[in-house]
Image (tube, rainbow, N blue to C red; front, side, top):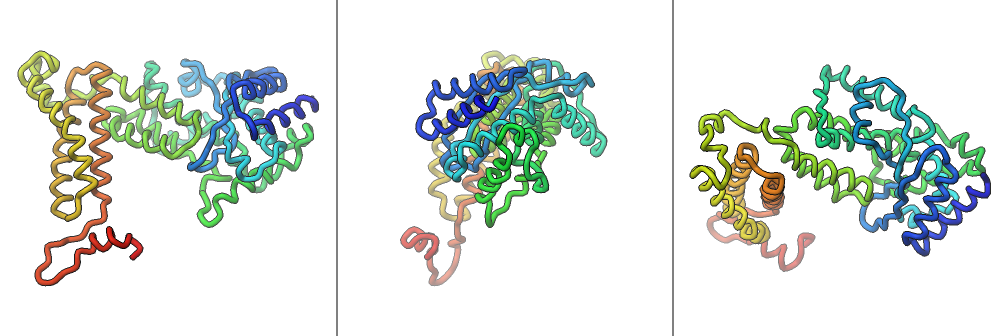
Length: 388
C-alpha cells in the first residue's frame, strides 16, 4: 500500500515536466490498483492559465437510468466509476507532490467509499422540495435527465471535494493511515491564498445554486430554454475544468434537442395547419423563413454597429432593432416545426443577437445633444485612455 502511494506521488511529480497521455494512463492504472473496488475511467491534466483554480475534480460517471433512480428510489447508490481532472495551477501555487496526492486520494475516497454522498444528495433534494413546496414532474427522456445531471454531479462534487471542507476539519483520518497526514490543510490553504482580498463564499462553504437552477430549468424548460443556453455558454467560459465543460455541453445539447411541442402558442393555433406546414410549405411560413435569412445576414452589420456606437441615439436605435429581431426569432423557434439542426441554427443566431445587445447596452457613451460650446469626452477617451 505504501509503495503504491509512493508511486502515485512520483507520477504526479512527473506531471510538472510532461503531462502526455502515457503519464496520465500510468497514473490512472496506479489509482485503479489502489482503489480496487471502483474504477477510474480517465485522468485529465488541464493547463489552466486565466481561470480560477479548481484543484482536483473527481466526477461520477452515471448510467443513463441512475439520475432518475437517485430522485425516485431509496435504494443505496454507490459511485462505481469516476473521472479525475488535475489543475495545473496546483503546481503554480506551490503545492508539493504529496499535497496534490492527498487532495486526489481524499476526493476519490470521499466520493466512492460508500453510498453516503448520494444519501446526502437525496437529503438535500428532499429539503429543497420541502422548503419551496414544489416537486419535479419526472420525465423519462434522456434529454431531460442530462439537464439534471449537471446539477446532481456539481452537488456531489461539492459534498466530497476537499476544497469545501469545513475549516474546523483540519485533516482526515483516512489520509493519516496512508502516511499523508498533515498534507491536506496546507494544500487547501495554498489554494485559498488566491482569494485574499476577494474571499470567495464557496471555498469551505458549498454553494448549491447550480442544482437549484437546474431544478427550476427542468420544470420550466419551455420558457427558460433560450436564456438557459446563454447562461450555460457564459458559465463554460468562466471555468477551466474540462469535466465541467463536458457537463455544460451535454446540458446545452439536450436543450437544443428537447421536443418543442410545448411551445405552441395561442397565436399559432389561430393559423392552424398553414402556420405549421413548415418553412417549405405554407406561404406564411415561407415568408417568415425568408425574413429570418435576412435577420441572420444582418448579424455582421450589428457586430460592427456595436463596436462603433458612440451616441445615445445610436445605442437606442440599435437596441430597438435588435429587440425586434429577437422577438421574431423567439417566435419562429417556439412555433415552427423545425429539425434539430434548424433549431440549433436559429437558437445560435438568437444567442448571438443577445450577446450583441448586451455589448451595446454596456457601452460607455455620452449625450452629445448639447447647445453652445462642449467637449466630446469620447474623443478624449480615445486619445488618452479612460484613465485620463
